[in-house]
Image (tube, rainbow, N blue to C red):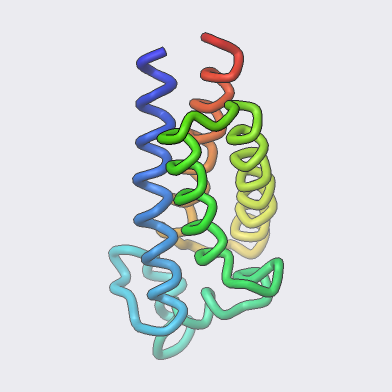
Length: 136
C-alpha cells in the first residue's frame, strides 16, 4: 500500500509541476532544458507553438489547465476520503488523454519533456489509484 501511496502523490506532484509549466509555456518562453531542443527550434518560441496547437486544447480548454484542475480535484478527493473508484475514473480519463497525446508526439516525432513528464505522472497516478482501489 505504501507503493500505491508513493505513486499517487508522486504522480500528483509531477503532474502539477508539468501542467503548470505547460500552461506557462503557452504564453511565455520556456528553456529547452524543460521541453526538448527540437521543439524549441520550431520558431522563435517553439514551445509556445506546441502548447498552442489544436491538440494542446483537445476539449477547447488548454490541456494543462484541465490537468491542474484534475490533480487538484484528486488531491482534494484523497484528503476528504472520496471513493477510490471516483478518483480512479478521473485518473483513467487523464490517462486516456495522455495516451492519445503521446501517440501524437511519437507520430509527429516531437520532443517535449514537459509533455512526457505529464504523461508519466498520469500513468503513475492511474496505477497508484488502481492499486489502492483493488487493495494491493
